[in-house]
Structure formats: structure tokens, C-alpha cells
Image (cartoon, rainbow, N blue to C red):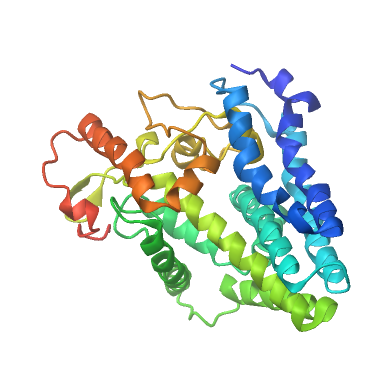
Length: 377
């Protein structure tokens, strides 16, 4: 177990700062154009997959009782990313809309790479920030989400996903045999609806209408409007278009990760709309070292759902005895998810093995496969 004294040293946090190397890389790609525009996607998807093979797994856990005073370097990491991403995104909009050496296709390719960064890193860091009690950190998370036009993710994630994961009421729990090409359009619609409904119902319990200023959707819409307006002011219609390219890419990056995290894992229906409590077994876990550096331990997702208030350096790795394990890290698995036959060949046997291990008493899985069980109460 990693002691708090060791965790508090800057050397311990340093590997997680590797995401910041993507910023000079994307700027270099912008100045050079051509094949360099592939540098960001290849570095995140393929380079870290290779690093995972080289560095192996990290099975060591930090003391979960470590106080926040020992986590300063880790907290600074997520906070500082907000201005860095803001300057990078809008700086590149300004630069590329005035750069003569880049064709329209090259500009689009560049902002696809920017979207890989704002999705893989930015939304992931917003996820860490939105879970914190500190109001300033939650605001920083909102700013990151507004930069990719996905502000409702906060409401959906906190009020819907964490409460109803593994049940028919959670759109994000990918169903068994549901390919990503069917999952993606479904969650784009259902997550927005469920997020708005959750906030509306929360206001109704306080005898307030959805139009009340306390509805965070007003803040979401305002922040997103500011981000869109700024892109237009800096880069005109071209800048606005490039902003939308990166936002769309970032949203896709988020949802393909969501697809991987819970594919085929369902909570047992106990009858009359009651479900078992969330356990580590209801999320796919991965101990791959390098990709956990890049994703700030997001792959320790089994523990995150078990203890959502833990900061990322304190998330515990769960072994096969408690949680199902992915064969590779998220970066490889998200690529596999884009090829449904490959994905099903790799993952369906693992889902069936998980069912035999934890729920041998269930003989009819059709209600779980098709989300036909009653909605949780």
C-alpha cells in the first residue's frame, strides 16, 4: 500500500502529468501539417497501447484514508488543465483560420485531433472535477464540458448513471450484443432526456418548475453559448465549424469509453423494481499502467462506482475475485468497439463467464439483454 507521505511527493504524481505533452504535440502538428496531423490520435490510441505492453500493470493501491493535504499535485493537475485546454482550443482556432499552409481538409483533421484531446483528457478531467465537493472545482468541470457542448453530462452522470447503472433506467449501460453503432445514437438522445428529466424532478420535489433559475441547464446553455460565440468571433464561420468538429469528436470519445465501461454488466433484479446494490463487479476494470496515467485511473472504474467520492489517486484496483477484467486498456478496447464483430468475439464470452461466476441462479437473460426488466423505483 502506498503511504500518504510517499503519495504527497511530486514524483508520485508526475506520470499522470503525461497528458500535458499532447499540447505541444498538437501545436507542432498545426505548424507542420501533412502527416503530422495524425500524431495526436496515434499517440493516444497506439503509443499508449504500446506503453501498456512495455510497462505492464499497476496493482498497487494507495491508502484510501489519505487526506487531501497529501494530494496537492494531483488536484493541481486537473484544475490547471482547464485554462490550458481553453488557450489551446481557441488559440488553434485563431491560428488555423489564418494559416495559409493548411488546407480545409488539414484543418478538419487537426481539429479531429483536438477533439481527441478534449474528449480523452478534457471530459475525463471534468468527470473528476464534477465529483468533488468544492464548488470551484465543479465550475471548472462545467467549463470543460461547455467547450465540447456536452454540459448535460454532469447531470446525467451524477443523477442518473451513478444511481441506476446496470439497470434499464441507465442509458449508458451498454446492453449485451448491442454494437456501438446502435448504442451511440441511442445514448445521444436518451442521455439528454434523462438528464433534463432528473433535474426537472429534483426541482419538482422542491415545488419549483423546470424554468426556475436553479435549473443548471440555464448555466449549461449559457456557457455553451459563450463558447460557440467566442469560436465565431475568433475564427468566423470557419472557426465555428472547426469548434464543432472537435466537440463532435470529443463526445464520440466519451461515449465509446462509456460503452466499454459497463458493456453487458447488469445488476440483479430482486423483484418489484428493486435491484441489488452497485458493486465492483458491475464495471469493467483494467490495471494497465500507462493508460491509467493518461486517463488518471479512470480504468479503476469498478472502485469509482463503488466509492464515487474518492479522488483519482486513491482509487483502488480490484482483482478478478471482485471485478471483471478487460483484456487490454481502454485505448485498445475503444478501437475494438468500433468493429462490432471483433468486439463481440472478444467481449461476449467474457460477459457470459461473468454471468456464470456471479449469477448462476439466473437462467433467462433476455430481460437483461433487452432492458425489459422493470425500471428501478
